[in-house]
Image 1: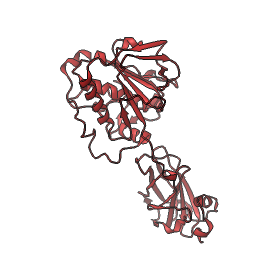
Image 2: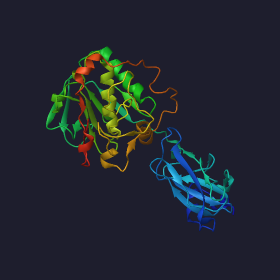
Image 3: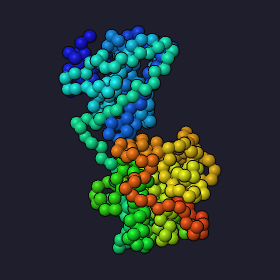
Image 4: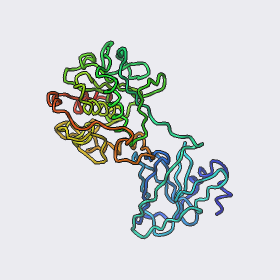
Length: 379
């Protein structure tokens, strides 16, 4: 069949989904598996349709990617197959890397996939670009040092309008009190911690542009929280909140404890991206005893909870969390980043001060086990 003639035009791939299947599908047999990620930022893409074609050019299966961008075809009899990935808002792509054009989208021109009997063919992966050459914009994180004080009022979360669902009434958060040099160091540390990801950290007010905001300054009492609250953020049981405010109460940290200030900041920002508490001590979302090195987002699965393991995201069914992969799923990664974590351009503060031991009772304002409502707060 001449797919170039049948499927000509911008929406060439649309017509293939309505072609009747043949007998290449079987109750038991081999499968095709792979992942789909966004080309520019390596972000897994959910709900991508993967059309599987027989050697005669007939659609024999339609697989769909999950939240991790992974898919598995139905069982297939041994033979040669071809695959095409498509989703609204992205340019369709054939395996292996062959794009569709406005005039041609013949699936049989792609790389053939040999499926053996009862065999699993892995690595049939796709990188999709956004339609029209649109470049993904990095989510903004605004670190607000509250010069002249920050005023925040109770209401539906909006960083644009200085409203927060986790405060009562009107609250005034005093300015960051440890000086310009300390703030610059903490800001660099926050940027370094998020450097592996497709996130832009700024200290300039984005104004009416939707953003996540961290108010860095003041005391927990000013926010209406217990005196041992190091920071607090709204919480939607693992669902990222796009335009909300988190708090890191820097005034209760020693002026020289730049690591502590950085870690509470990245911890609370992490909640805005849907990250839960976890037990892995090296991860910034952990409350386990502090180590000598700076906490960051670690590519390792960990049980969730504070002290006692609990299902992640308000009861699961997820039992573990990998903060690196969760952030990759939410925002993508920085494809230009070449380090382990942190940006080499920014020197990082090292070590935890002994004086921090006097603040061991510090907590994150959001408690995992109490975050059972659709909306809550996370410390």
